[in-house]
Length: 294
Image 1 (cartoon, rainbow, N blue to C red):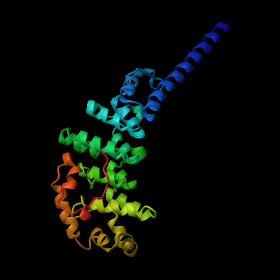
Image 2 (cartoon, rainbow, N blue to C red; image 1 turned 90 degrees about the vertical axis):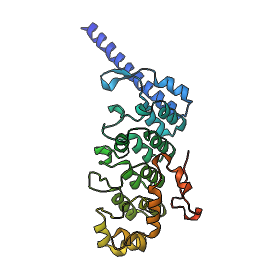
Image 3 (tube, rainbow, N blue to C red; image 1 turned 180 degrees about the vertical axis):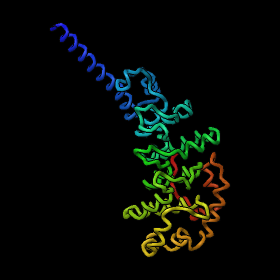
Image 4 (cartoon, rainbow, N blue to C red; image 1 turned 45 degrees about the horizontal axis):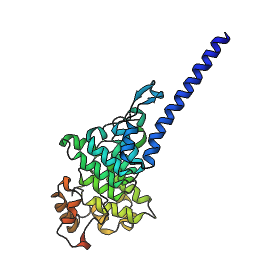
C-alpha cells in the first residue's frame, strides 16, 4: 500500500511538472512576440513542439494563424507581414479551439479592429485580394463569435468602437454595410447607437458617420430610422440638419456625397486606400482625412 501511494504521488508530481512545462512553453512564445523579438527567432520558437495539456496532451506547433493573432495583440508588424507573405492562407485560417470559442468567426479581422491595428489590418485586406472572389467576400463579412461578439461583423465592431480608419479600410475592401447582427442591427444602426452615447468622442463618431456615408446606398434600410423620426429634435441637434434629413429619409444625400460615392465606386479594392489620394480634388475637399500606416 505505501508503495502504491508513493507511485501515485510520483505520477501526480510528474503530471504537475508536465502541465507547468506546457504553460511555460506556451507563455515563452507569447512573451517573445510581446517583446517584439526578430522574426527568425519567433519562427524557430513557433515550430517547436508544444504539449497542449488541456487538449488531451496533444503535441503540436503553433500555426501561422495562431502566431498572427499574437502579432496582432502586440502589434508586431514585421512578424505579421512575414506570416501573411509566406503563409497567406494558413495565416488567415481558423485557429484551433483553444484560441477561440467560435470556429465560424473571422478572428484576425476582429482582433485588428479591436486593437486598432490599422497597418496589419491593411496587410490582411491586401492579402485576401488574392483569394477567389467568393472566399474574399465571405471572409471580410463573416460574423463574429455568437457568445462574445453577438454575431457582429468586423464592420459592426469598427462602428461600435469608433475606429474610422478600420471602418474605411473594411468598406473599401468589400465589407457590406447592409448585413445585420444577431439583433437585426446593421453597422449603421450600431454606429448611430454609439453616437447617441458619445460625448467626448463626438468628433470621432461624426467622422465615422461621414466616412461611412460615402459607401452607403442612396436608399437606406436600417432599424434606427424609426428612432430618428420619434426623437427628431434630439437627433437633429446631434447630427446636424443635412445628416439628419438624409438619414431620416426627408431628403436625398448631398451632391457632394453623391459625387464622392461615384468616385469611390470606380476605385479598385486592390488599390485601396492608395487610390484615394489620386481623386481629382483639392486637398481640403478630400473626404477621408485619415492617416494610413504602411
